[in-house]
Length: 131
View 1 (cartoon, rainbow, N blue to C red):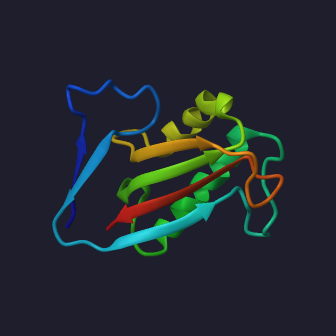
View 2: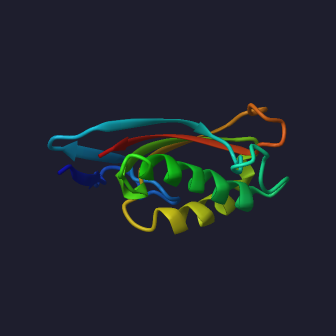
């Protein structure tokens, strides 16, 4: 069993979004590296054209499917890197992320990019899970 310990040093500001500054994992474990997920449905088409909330939900569902495929849960995700085409959508994205990571969210980096792999994709998230 993996011990998962959120780290919030008193010398760092409290996060204003859905992330934890650092996560300590201890114990025997397996690691799952999840490739960048965009908002593709099972049919391969982008879900939620032009809608950051809908695309974030689909991306989180895709992350959930990947981690559940090996017997894990979203709580096993320790780190995410989030690529967005408009950083101004931060609050909208985090409102959705909060529903998937309601407590002790993963360590996170968010970066604005000019374009993702599909021109209709607005957000892409990759992740590392420890199981």
